[in-house]
Length: 431
Image (cartoon, rainbow, N blue to C red; front, side, top):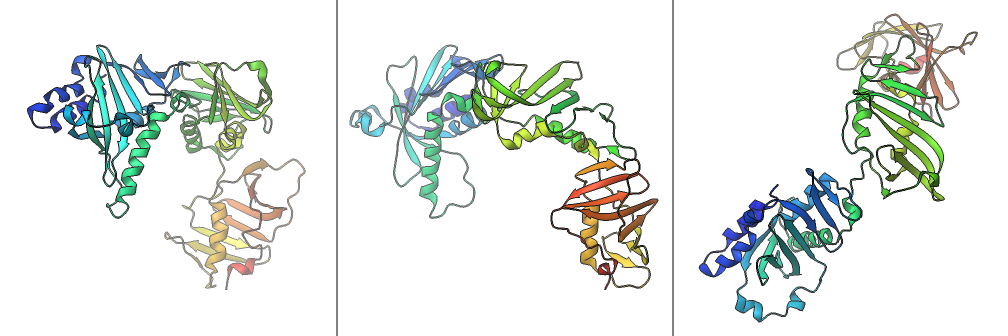
């Protein structure tokens, strides 16, 4: 692939006049063929089999980072080339003080070397020098970063120019590990099943094709396709915060969890979560696809601690329901809910909208967990009961949990609420 071809050719057309014809040839890369590698002072990337890899160690590079790098460098343009006479009058050490600000393109038939020089004060330009492998001397130019700037230029213009220049300089000083692809899963795959074992919950399996789980979904509840699809989507976004190459398994201690991802073709990707590596505490993931070890953050580790119920639809109330009865065992009131979410009593009672909003916000969200009523288990007496369609719901509290018991399904819906958000007094819902 011919990267930057347009960019470098475009530079050659900026200048007018015969004196710049030779200089413009520096940017004509067509004759040099396809890109083979790219190098800076601290990193080297090679293009192989349609993708970039780092050198020493040889490891897949992150496509997004590579595109960002080349996208930024691709915005460098030349406003003017310096003549040979001008170059002879300049002290190179003053105009190119940092010997590490350079990059090289290695192509099939040659190479191009570019050095980033000193920024010129009071405008958006800086010095640049470049040379092709078939040229004896460097060509000097006054360059600028043509990337777009958010907003309208103001008194912050000079600061913006400096930031863009410093951004380029930082890119050229990045080390090899910045470019590593730190995704736990490098390529998206067609996932068929996922089974997960961890130290907190019982083992389970999710069958995405047949939309079921093992242990099976409680009677009356459904498989949550949205939750399953979101999990798979997020799975391919998981990233490491640090990578260890050629890590030995014997240096990993305390297995916390294990995830098997089964593809539609029957292949299995296994990710294992450990608590320590080389006596270093944290979260560490090992894959069966490569010897690389990933250190991950706590937020990423939570994917290994999921519960089978995370893939169940645990919402008590769908808003298609419009008619309700709210009671406390002695009194009851019939209610209707309008399409715009407002409530009114059919018995001409004034509604306390705030209390009803809190109640129905709970019912409209997924429960944190559900469980079946055990044999011989008694439900505590409830001072608040809600009826709709064929269902009767009993509300009661247990420590920091709100529990709603569905009498028909014989299922308890648990909500971890801390401070109780609803009232259990029937008349608080009316004025």
